[in-house]
Image (cartoon, rainbow, N blue to C red; front, side):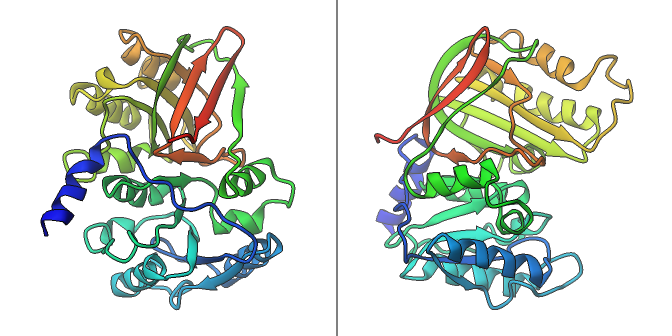
Length: 317
């Protein structure tokens, strides 16, 4: 018990463990911890992963349905726990986001996982699980999911980046400048994901540590006032002042209704203008086709320059 408590205490620092990278012939699992999904998307993802030389197993309840969820809490929990415990599985692909991972967060056991760690892959509602994995000291992958492996073409750049990262070859990302960017250079640990999920876990044991963090945020179907309110939560809660850098990604499926007196990015820029660290806007992460895979828990170099933004992963632990 003492050893387990010590492990729990150590998870707020930046020494995240990387699961082994994948090789041909490795096993991966597809599970559905959140929303329900049609069988065709799971089968399509399985075919894509097999084309990469991987062996795929699927959760028993991966295509179950219980309301909007992929089965009952018990069934979703059982599938994810089995994948985490599996001796040979090297990566866990979430089938899709939606809602429901919060039902599982305090019920998962990392005892077997610690002996055989594996990559967790997904975004959106899967941010809940990314926070859980960080609490337990493990890096994970905020990236396109099984659904996208079916929907996107074989040469889709984000799917190819995902494949490269899983093989141990992370790319260096560059993207265009934005007029609201704050120039600068920072080093830190990359953490983040869906803003609503992050704020929903504020004040819990699964909150993100702010000190030394390069934070990335994105969201979908949230009105400008709701997004600004969540940003104020981070500001008034002392999170923003402790960051090393801030990556503001894609906020989609909302209307600029004039409620803020300015557009959303401009409102967020006002909230962070007092800080000295670099900030970039319109980074390609979120509920969009061009959704760059990001390693939660990786040390990064983040540079916001006059002409472009660069994000470089440092895997030398």
